[in-house]
Image 1 (spheres, helix red, strand yellow):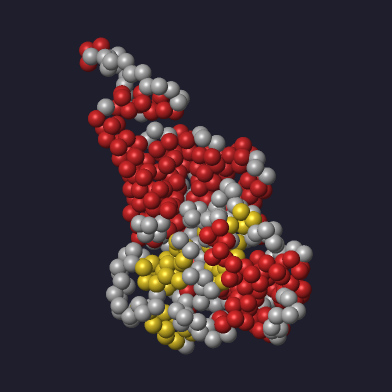
Image 2 (cartoon, rainbow, N blue to C red; image 1 turned 180 degrees about the horizontal axis):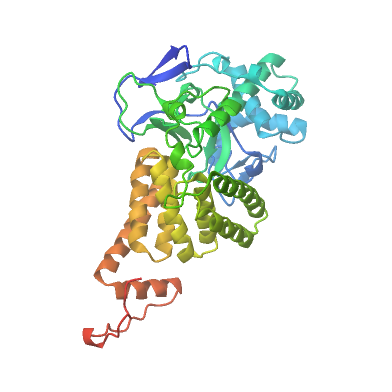
Length: 473
């Protein structure tokens, strides 16, 4: 933590600032979780130590609840799992993830005390809990969690007061950081990282956070000068400023005063309408946006039930209404394009998905920070879709752009970056083959798709080619 310093300002409270200069991709600090747990729905699919997904996990022989990759992970977990294991056996079942995380935090405090631990700039006791800002529904949920915690907590362990337990549950509520699997593609758990809690929000931040090999890394997105405040974004930027402010107020209990929110930067792009001789009226735009909102709700239901042909049908209907009215960077258009390209790719209809994914990333690139991790992931998915559709030039270009972004946001050692590097090398090889001999490239591709042995006939002489036979696709 020698790279950062804690400061306090009246408007934001505590924050972190750089004590030396950083450049894009630099790791400012890395931090292991003070305590972390796997989500309830994934306890049997994800290792409780390293948070990696595995098809076959070994189960704890005593509590039958915790799962591990192997003996090594199980041994590494025992110091944290020992108390949990006996509590689950006594209680008869494992409580929800919030209770399990709170218990792990309090067992560590019972063992080490609530003060500063090695490598931490702030103690758990001094983290914000925002309990005083809770609404009636949140207070009701807090009471239920308190009752569940008291039932789970062993009577022979140190007894903590209700106020202190409420503080821990409040800290989890507004400071819990989502952990991802080894590929960074799915949220699998939640943890508390005290140093990360000191980093303030900005809708257009200079840092990003990534979970890599059991630790979070705070990485610079561009040049950061000495004394400059370090910021990350708590929410996705792809919302108009007013919606982001409401989300931050509701979830994190503060009013965002960043430049992008104060000036509404890019709001006009996010709500863009078609330009032309006949600009659509406000009423028409309002009706299309309302229709888009209703369609997105129906799509969520259909995806939950796995009815993908219905998702495609709903997207087509929505796009028919959106295309004549909404601009290329309009949020509601981009959301439908994203779902359409994703579902069509899942259904292996790559030729059709390619067009939608191209439109989606073209819009994203005008809205997101150039080194935004979500932009990088979207470019990667779109590039793979283009590649599968046989559009090797477009696919390779998108994969290269994605690789450049993920080198900054994830680093060269992250598994997803390694996967992307392999894709980049493979697509580059195929692109070279395509440029040297299109006929050979498409013949090999066709054979590969049909899982057949390649049988290439001699290429016809130039004077034997009929018009249009070997035109570019």
